[in-house]
Length: 287
Image (cartoon, rainbow, N blue to C red; front, side):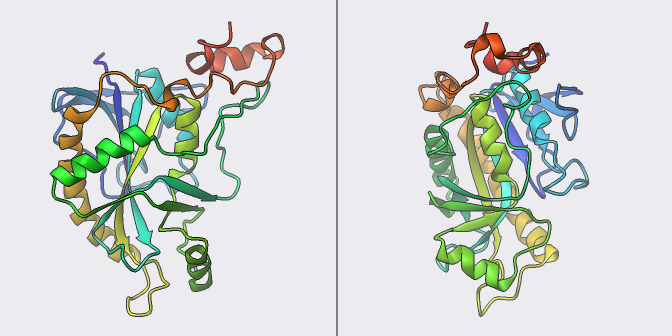
């Protein structure tokens, strides 16, 4: 099986990557169920990559149905250390236009009841999450976007909503008053679970619309999103190719040791099942 240090999670419109060579399809199961799809291992610009279409081929699963724990665990099992997430977002700021890109650095979690932690049922962990996106990976993602001559905004707050319905106008205005820059449905719990798994996580957010707050733009529709997203996906693929040579061999960010002081449960009280299920996450810290 090929080694993959880089994971790419493709959102709406990005269901496959013809740019990958030496492709191998891997079907997996985890203690948290099966990933959404078989994982595609391949080579992109000399780097081993694991690609996973977030919603499954044909966009079969909605944002609240995604087996995110299985997805992240499976990527971790394959040796992935860094995840680049590609997904559609709506803009909550006048200056962030449709067809532009945002590489966010903050999240407001406005989801409702999603399973967003590996630490339950006999083990408690409290990770630091002040910086929800890896600053190192986000920076080189921005550099790759610049090389691709794409209009990309560095930084910004991603409002994670539950969906699958789009916002009401009142909600959209509320999120704007909170200072959010873009709105989407999938960065949570991906970012949280990736951090618990000590994986770097960055988002390449493709702006498809102005949500529904903008007085001179029509309200968001699925047709609008998919039409604009297809244009953005081609740019995203170009950026991903340019990104690969920029990725450093060594990780010296806080993501790599996120669990070092996070596990609160005394080792003697951690259940055998938790130790077994979370072995690939906690083996450095729990014997």
